[in-house]
Length: 487
Image 1: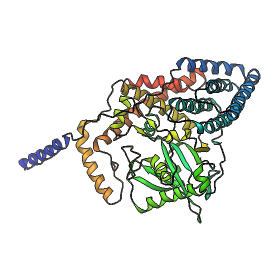
Image 2: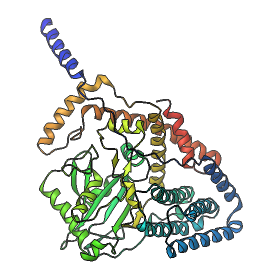
Image 3: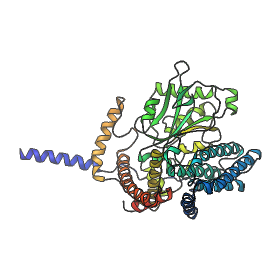
Image 4: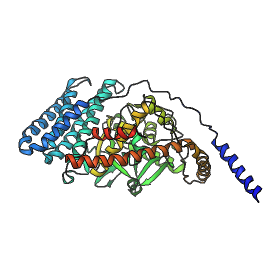
């Protein structure tokens, strides 16, 4: 009996050691030949925080005249952009960005103008995108001008929203109500057309990494395509999930999957392709719907948008529209820092110039129709962004994303079990296309992320009690950097 037990233990130990043998190749990422955008404006952020605190002490009466002057100035600059053909290097764009930040700090002391400011930003974004149709979006100046005004303006708006009382915030912000000939339905009070693109931010730690892990960090991590049936009118959402590849979801299932924000984008009606065929967006959505119904399309962990056999989320829109002559992502994202690239390579990424969800907001072929966000989810978005920024700083200083080596045999067994389930059309605990090693890194990343988040939330609550306002984003980054070094 004793010999039998020893034999069983020895056999199990043999297989355990066998499954410990590393098989994964060491990946040396081929970086994009570009540079990461860096704001490098710490003194500006501190001065804006000081101005915000000062504004809160002054109140509306003393601030309104300056707020109105700033609104008028922003409107006049917008009109000037509309009436002229300006190059992206024109100093006017720098002016409009600066006054947007300054105005946000003033409104902190006069919150009743918050919604006006949000609407003004929407107008500025629309004007800039219209102007950029004549630019070469592969040009660095054009790329940075769009990013500084649209991403920077969004940052100013959302910092203000987070500091405002909840009753002063509307969850729905309407943008351009672009006409469309395609079938439509109503979702949460907004008319959504077949072919519209939903860009969202998930609530998982991986979602924050997708949004922030590139040379132009953004706020969105997921892309989906809307298909509205001609006759029955229910909206179907076509999207690619890490866990199960491309799937068709109901609007209920789409919204049930945690979203921190959702933005609706629509092709401009004056695009040449839509002038020829106004139903083109509907045909694109139907193509995606029919292919997803007909075959299984795995998730593309490599992020290779030139491979049509597998799709990551952005490819659901880009690959489908490309077949009908519309090339979305006029400027693709790049990943040029070695630490960020190594971490992403550890999850299976092999292509470091790719289609990031956030970039669609800057694409002049698309109009922003609407956006949903609320204070609770917006705050989580900011906290998650700060954590990823701090972790990627550590990565770019040489910190590796490792995993618990002794768990590898168990992960490989789970991977084998998942492969069997995948063969029968079911989801496994290790996603199709993801290695056991990548799954272990993912779990380690989530563990580090959640540990830092728990500590940040304590620091943020303490800051709010002591200062009577929420810590701004740059303060959250400071908290996160402190704890990232400890992990």
